[in-house]
Length: 423
Ligand code: LLP
Image (cartoon, rainbow, N blue to C red; front, side):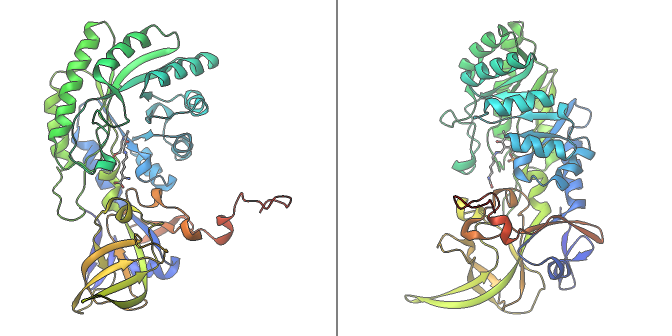
């Protein structure tokens, strides 16, 4: 459930017409609904009820500090994968002892920053990473809190690019090797073993792969405990999917119930790293139609709607062939036409939708690209020297710009012509 609804013929975000915001802020524009963010966080976190747990929002899904701050205010933590995300999370007010750090390529500098901040957990993904962390922690004279990320070899049945829990993926350490790494970690003076972690993939639409991974982890935790290795935290990662089109992912409560049941009597603090399920349907990308045109592609006429948003603003359609529903911001009675909705970038791969039935639109009309809250702005770039869009947060009848639209001077920030002063 989200708070983007039509009232009469106008699309609203909570109590504000999307059109009115676009008129003031311009397009393209990312628009988020606070009530939806809060509702989704509550639904997810609340599903685990009285189970000892911590919901660490996956910052990569939507990293604006104005949004991270909402989750921090609700007691949420953060799942980070870089020094930049650590910086954001701290700026947003996330408590350091609620931050978990995942990722296969942490640099020594990033480890240092996270150790100095006092984060809850490093999810370590290789033997070499463990060695480096030991060394950095020793230099600082501190203990590094660690979980090893286990690769459970489970098929999440999702897009190949976002599947992470298969043996052939680059993530984590295979179960048997992980056992040996725990034995090694135990002997390291500056490593404090706290938990076990895993993350099997993203946009999962079934609970079974999660349960399969959890079953394997339970056995693994049992083995470690028999060995006298204390495991306090079990981090199950993120991955719960959302409805973009006709997917039927589990409701967060259903996911939580299944996990709770499978946990059985396992005594651990559960850590969860949801991203998409919280923010995905809480954000849209608003774009304006620039031109419409018809090219005759052989026997078939091909209709194009050219909008002012492009693959640099929302890359999911180009990158994964992802489906995003597109709605007119003001509904009309126009007949449906089969169109490609495309951006201004000089690549055929620059599309928001292909072969989509949409009511006929005209220059100046606004369209809403739905479900763009997750991996939308965070994956945007300046390709074709396009300033990135503004981000706006709506709360009831109010809105705030939480990231101003980039200007041309932002495009060359930090660049320099040799011998001249920096721009
Ligand atoms: N934890 C870890 C360690 C992760 O790698 C990820 C996502 C998450 C949590 C959050 O997963 P979520 O709950 O959002 O599924 N750009 C792609 C998605 C990449 C996901 C990467 N890892 C997309 O647009 O679909």
